Image (spheres, rainbow, N blue to C red):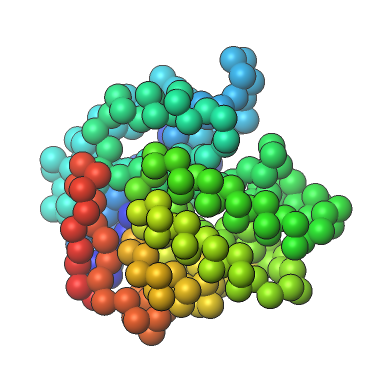
Length: 267
Ligand code: ZN
Ligand code: FE
Ligand code: FE
Ligand code: ZN
């Protein structure tokens, strides 16, 4: 039994497919009790007129997204939560705080997908890895994740080691960086998302890696669970494996959110 999947996208972002009802039907058939949509928040950090095609919902689609999720919550047999996945880009915190406050989100998930404008998880920008020193890429990535956590804008930090997505891994020991990240998460009071999408990519590993999850557990960082589904078939995919991983790390509960307040479900 999968208790929850808190990372579902919708076709509004431009690179996911299927209707909200299709995602929910799949969740029902997989025996998932509670789901949360967390589609890509509008790109608040771009200059006026600038755009990244098919990356996120447009600003004027946000009210529709909220309405569609709320409407499905009213009719679905599942508990349906209103989340959102927000790219963290330093320097726009005030603007973002203002925009987030306008909607009754159950939880806000913070993601780092850009290192100084480099979309490091975008297949089109994969060539950049070979031009950089991987140790520095990882350091920059985790510093941004830490900075995002400390803004206080996010309840959950998504796919905490996304930088491994394409399988580029530095040879150095990442433990100090992991330890520092866990300490910052503790101080910031954020949850981390255990995200099964890494299984679908060359990393072939859940985010976070078992060694990183063990460190988060030592620091008593609460977890959520998400498949990062971009089509209905992906709902719940890999979450059985994610549950095995978190149980073997020692976790006994998963965090749930309602209007940004936490509760817990035993696993
Ligand atoms: Zn996406
Ligand atoms: Fe993401
Ligand atoms: Fe996502
Ligand atoms: Zn994501």
